[in-house]
Length: 248
Image (cartoon, rainbow, N blue to C red; front, top):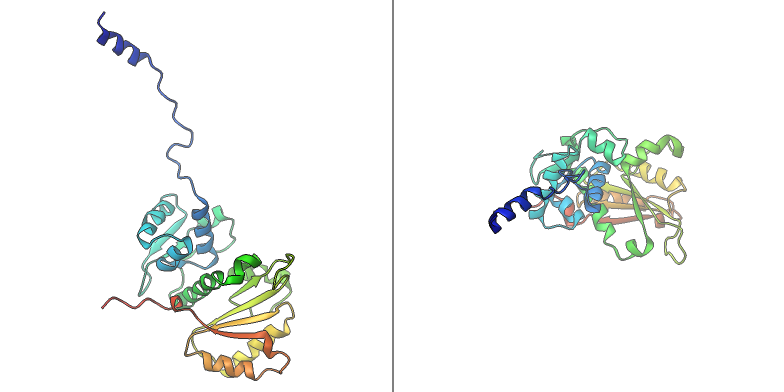
């Protein structure tokens, strides 16, 4: 028998490697899980802010979204001016353990949803966030737990929780976050502020405002009793809260 024939027999007799049980199954990374949770907690996310939250270049995001769609956890579409949006499907909500309805973001709320997510990303980059181990409690989570909290009034756009860790500057505190894009009647804004500062759980109420809303918010804060005014902080929304300017 020739050497070539021996090689053929050896090759034919060699056992084939067993197929892995998870072959073809998409393995989610920690970044995938964080991104899916973010989309679920915020009703959805525009592509540019989602890429920023995941710390990936915008060009890498489409491949990530394709993987999420392939396993049935997310839907994507262009819902209005600006970047496309991603939100969770029913399977995505179930996989993340979030007990929220699975629906595309409402068109009338896109600007507000974007601004709240931008506020979160901006606050998470502040110097004390990481050192204080702060975490974001979204409006959707607050609505789910509202009856248990015993607070049936105004629900803020989010809460910031500061764990009770030794040496923490804000240890044990809870802050309310309000995002204002448009001016409301002064009486309504003052009423909401009064309710939030009266609800003694909140050590601070942070208002992040667009330029149009800031005068009403500052007037409302100035109308509170002097002892309550230090519990209101008014800041400008970061520029990423607003739709990117279209290319000229």
